[in-house]
Amino acid sequence: MAEKLLEIKNLKLYFNEGKKNEVRAVDDVSFDIYKGETLGIVGESGCGKSTTGRTIIRLYNATDGQVLYDGADVHTKKSKAELKEFNRKMQMIFQDPYASLNPRMKVLDIIAEGIDIHGLAKSPKERMERVYALLETVGLNKEHINRYPHEFSGGQRQRIGIARALAVEPEFIIADEPISALDVSIQAQVVNLLKELQEERGLTYLFIAHDLSMVKYISDRIGVMYFGKLVEIGPAEKLYTTPCHPYTKSLLSAIPLPDPEYERNRVRVSYDPKSHNYAEDEEVKMREVTPGHFVLCSEREFELIQQEK
Ligand SMILES: Nc1ncnc2c1ncn2[C@@H]1O[C@H](COP(=O)(O)OP(=O)(O)OP(=O)(O)O)[C@@H](O)[C@H]1O
Ligand SMILES: [Mg+2]
Image (cartoon, rainbow, N blue to C red; front, side, top):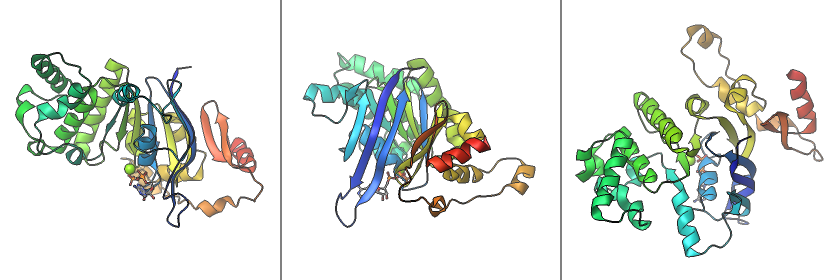
């Protein structure tokens, strides 16, 4: 079994806690992320994917629960030096590379920002060389160094965002819908780049996406979120071949396939959270269906799932 890099335990992030407009964006979520893997997180808009990612890297203070990184609690008080090191190890890539790149900064300075903060280059020459190497790594050219973000296409901007994240030699990258804003033809290129980088550098990814179609190609395991809860998690192929939670089934039924025969017969199933009909005393928790494949269900539902298998 691979080593755990992150352990997320009963994590909660409530916005406006205790107030009328309280939003339970992350509501008692537990999962692990293993070193070198890609964990995909999917679910519809507003289900809490971004908030989960942001809470993991401490952009938000958790309402409750724990995030352990290499065994150390992320949310406990830290010294400045510890925080800095922590911020170096965990990087984020965003959906809209344009919004996340300072329009008034040249590519050189955008990419070198982290190098400067963490003192990773000993001279301006080394700084420049590092940026050149990063540009090459992400498939851009040396000539791009003095240009501004608006001079690039969406796909190129995402490459700049990736170079900027890589500049500080991180271990763990949260990619929050990094390809959603890109043309379909460009999406695969960026996914392939991320995969190559992972192999070369042993990176660990949390890859956030709306639907199940693209995550399949990049994820080793996939977690499905619904309204702040993780409802199912397991090896990617298990989730596709034997989804257990009705919400996962509905997500899968929404993926179109380039097969006319399949498309003619494709039945979209919708998910009704009321359909569970849980009794008050029923314990609803994550239960293990097959090794590493967990589903949020009651004992009664768990028995039915096992009969179906
Ligand atoms: N800063 C905030 N203040 C209050 N509520 C927020 C804040 N950010 C997010 N929310 C709410 O928390 C819930 C989860 O939002 P989040 O952005 O994590 O969802 P998401 O799954 O990433 O959605 P999307 O697919 O649209 O990016 C939503 O109901 C959202 O409206
Ligand atoms: Mg989001």
